[in-house]
Image: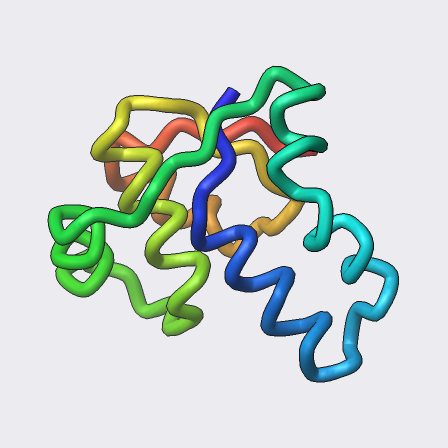
Length: 99
Protein backbone atom coordinates (compact mmCIF):
# COMPACT_ATOMS: atom_id res chain seq x y z
CA UNK A 1 0.00 0.00 0.00
CA UNK A 2 1.26 3.46 -0.91
CA UNK A 3 0.88 6.65 1.08
CA UNK A 4 1.38 9.86 -0.87
CA UNK A 5 3.75 12.49 0.44
CA UNK A 6 0.87 14.86 -0.40
CA UNK A 7 -1.31 13.15 2.21
CA UNK A 8 1.33 13.70 4.87
CA UNK A 9 1.71 17.31 3.70
CA UNK A 10 -2.06 17.88 4.01
CA UNK A 11 -2.19 16.30 7.47
CA UNK A 12 0.79 18.37 8.62
CA UNK A 13 -0.76 21.55 7.21
CA UNK A 14 -4.00 20.94 9.11
CA UNK A 15 -2.16 19.99 12.31
CA UNK A 16 0.08 23.04 12.02
CA UNK A 17 -2.93 25.32 11.74
CA UNK A 18 -4.53 23.75 14.80
CA UNK A 19 -7.31 22.12 12.78
CA UNK A 20 -6.13 18.57 13.55
CA UNK A 21 -4.04 18.58 16.74
CA UNK A 22 -4.53 14.82 17.24
CA UNK A 23 -2.37 14.22 14.16
CA UNK A 24 0.81 15.66 15.68
CA UNK A 25 1.89 12.39 17.39
CA UNK A 26 1.22 10.49 14.16
CA UNK A 27 3.37 12.94 12.23
CA UNK A 28 6.17 12.63 14.78
CA UNK A 29 6.28 8.83 14.32
CA UNK A 30 5.11 8.59 10.72
CA UNK A 31 8.06 6.58 9.41
CA UNK A 32 7.69 3.96 12.13
CA UNK A 33 3.91 3.83 11.80
CA UNK A 34 4.02 3.47 8.01
CA UNK A 35 6.63 0.72 8.23
CA UNK A 36 4.63 -1.19 10.87
CA UNK A 37 1.53 -0.98 8.68
CA UNK A 38 3.46 -2.24 5.65
CA UNK A 39 2.99 1.04 3.79
CA UNK A 40 5.42 2.66 1.38
CA UNK A 41 5.80 6.39 0.88
CA UNK A 42 5.02 7.68 -2.61
CA UNK A 43 6.97 10.85 -3.37
CA UNK A 44 5.53 13.63 -5.52
CA UNK A 45 7.47 13.75 -8.78
CA UNK A 46 7.71 16.38 -11.49
CA UNK A 47 5.49 14.21 -13.69
CA UNK A 48 2.88 13.99 -10.94
CA UNK A 49 2.94 17.78 -10.55
CA UNK A 50 2.52 18.38 -14.25
CA UNK A 51 -0.30 15.84 -14.51
CA UNK A 52 -2.10 17.37 -11.52
CA UNK A 53 -1.94 20.82 -13.06
CA UNK A 54 -3.19 19.60 -16.43
CA UNK A 55 -6.10 17.51 -15.14
CA UNK A 56 -9.34 18.44 -16.87
CA UNK A 57 -11.16 18.82 -13.57
CA UNK A 58 -12.84 21.87 -12.07
CA UNK A 59 -11.90 20.75 -8.55
CA UNK A 60 -9.28 23.20 -7.31
CA UNK A 61 -7.99 21.54 -4.11
CA UNK A 62 -4.27 21.01 -4.81
CA UNK A 63 -4.04 18.03 -2.47
CA UNK A 64 -6.89 16.23 -4.22
CA UNK A 65 -5.48 17.06 -7.63
CA UNK A 66 -2.06 15.60 -6.82
CA UNK A 67 -3.57 12.47 -5.25
CA UNK A 68 -5.69 11.87 -8.35
CA UNK A 69 -2.74 12.46 -10.68
CA UNK A 70 -0.54 10.11 -8.68
CA UNK A 71 -3.15 7.36 -8.65
CA UNK A 72 -3.60 7.62 -12.41
CA UNK A 73 0.14 7.79 -13.15
CA UNK A 74 1.04 4.91 -10.83
CA UNK A 75 -2.00 2.84 -11.88
CA UNK A 76 -3.14 2.35 -8.30
CA UNK A 77 -6.51 2.58 -6.57
CA UNK A 78 -7.17 5.78 -4.64
CA UNK A 79 -8.84 4.98 -1.32
CA UNK A 80 -10.97 7.93 -0.26
CA UNK A 81 -14.16 8.97 1.47
CA UNK A 82 -14.31 12.16 -0.60
CA UNK A 83 -16.97 12.04 -3.31
CA UNK A 84 -15.25 14.95 -5.07
CA UNK A 85 -13.30 12.31 -7.01
CA UNK A 86 -16.44 10.64 -8.45
CA UNK A 87 -16.74 12.93 -11.48
CA UNK A 88 -13.08 12.52 -12.38
CA UNK A 89 -13.23 8.75 -11.93
CA UNK A 90 -16.08 8.58 -14.46
CA UNK A 91 -14.05 10.42 -17.11
CA UNK A 92 -10.48 9.19 -16.60
CA UNK A 93 -8.61 6.00 -15.72
CA UNK A 94 -8.77 7.01 -12.02
CA UNK A 95 -9.76 3.96 -9.99
CA UNK A 96 -11.27 4.68 -6.58
CA UNK A 97 -12.38 2.73 -3.55
CA UNK A 98 -14.85 4.63 -1.40
CA UNK A 99 -14.22 4.14 2.30
